[in-house]
Image (tube, rainbow, N blue to C red; front, top):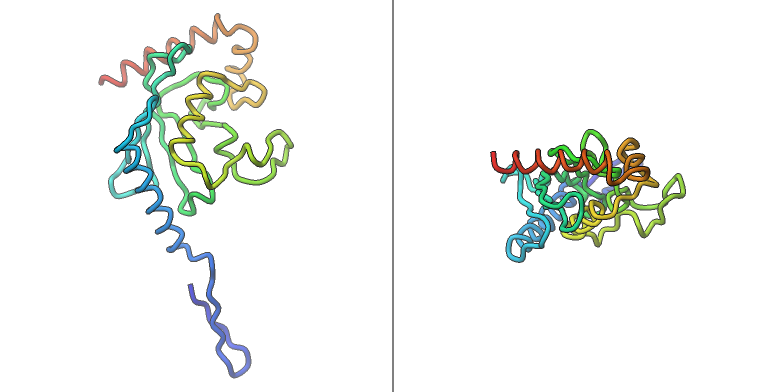
Length: 191
């Protein structure tokens, strides 16, 4: 982007290195490439596509509950919303299908390190290398989410009630609520 200002009798032009149109174009190209790669070589455990073919920054994913976990057999739909300066900043992920998990807020927002803004954690809980890095892809995000389903982190919960149940009685109330979510997800998947 060119910006001009007058310095006495001379007009000075400054080139801005943060051209939002250029970033959006680069972001769109990268996301199209990642989508094409996932369509060509699907990854076990999830499927991905666009919510609207005209918006490459809005994705719909379906996470298949990992085998040998309480989530096995579930089909959990979520949205990935990519910022226009992706991959410099992480996408946001929100489950649309109800899911009971310590690292998923009751409104569906996913809370894992890989989706946190890059840099230092102001609370000192996460190391910078655990947070978002521009090398991450949709595939690495989804593999992390699948791993999160298999191994919840109750030390840093987005859903305190689910974390408490996971810590205190994972085979009781927590298991019952997850089983209900799995059943509901199956019913919704075939509607």
